[in-house]
Length: 496
Image (cartoon, rainbow, N blue to C red; front, side, top):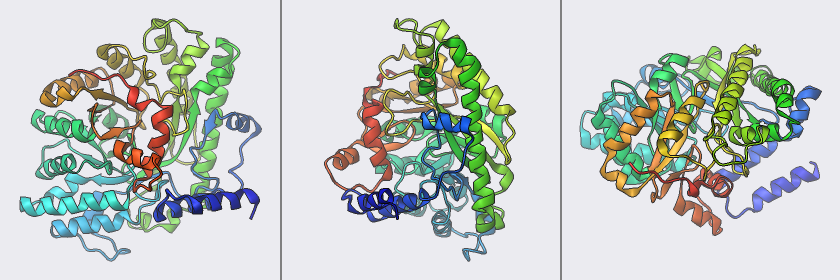
């Protein structure tokens, strides 16, 4: 054992803020990082060494996809031979079967990042409302206490169902960050159900709203929102998530022509190479599909997995390369900045779409940032503190989200009085979706549960963690760092 690895392990074992499951996860990550990294070409290694491309800490030896999306609907119909489960007959069977399966779904967080379209899964078993309320409360409590990571995500909607209403009601009462949640929104979603979702969201920062028309156009109807706001095919998922730090790339450029003609295409090629090699490792070296009953029972399929080409820091990149210093010229405000940003996104999309990986395909993703980011704005967002008026921010953001089939999102804190007028928030969401925004997150400015970048944390949990106490949620650790570097409590608060 090398001295560096030994020190890492001792540090994990002696950290008083880590719970036992968190220590197990950290120790597993240390073991995964013991082998040499997946080899890259000299050109790609240059970008990796500069921190311009990054493997998101998925490990030197990736042995499972980052995000796995089992076909839970199929599971509920057929049961599982491996898990010795028959199809459920009542609400208690339904929640029990799901909770058992979750224990066996791998991902980068060590548990499921997607727990299904839960109102659709449970609605057939809602026969007595009080009994269903009890069962769903136990279900949500179990998920929160055992997965305890708000990258765990559930979907509801678009239809108004008894199960959906019970889930919203209980989420507002419990005010827990796990699971994260999205409402699939389309023409079938009634205003009454949408407003109930908004009332819940202003209390507990979930659910976010999904522009179903856009994602259905990308993936067809069998997609899901998982983790932060990642859109991926059901029955597959995301193999790996590469991250292109546009700020660092812009800072490495000599001038505009050097950036556009040399650095940008070379960096995109480097990240595609890194993703391709890591995806190949998962299937050929780790033999993931051959070693999971999820594949053997038809719950996941190789051709339903994609690579996620993530990026951050577009705002800083544009301002740096274009040398924009005046407030009215900068990203999110000036026409020159917008035109340049959209051109850059078009070029990235064209190159990523043309790349032919060994397995599956690649899709663009607006990455949310990481806890150590400082001065790097997530995905294509406008930097905190520089937001224009809400209508201008919505229009600008919508124009930058066109190519992000694998998910992108923006979030908006609203004043407390928005709780009295959820219809006004719904009108804002409808307008944003009409203009091409893909995903709309919101919360009340005084909520205890808040959205960091895409995942959820409780302010009170972060305060306890920063005071030296152990906390149940892994996301609390990440949120504690991100709250400073990403200025999450300094966002412009909007009126409804």
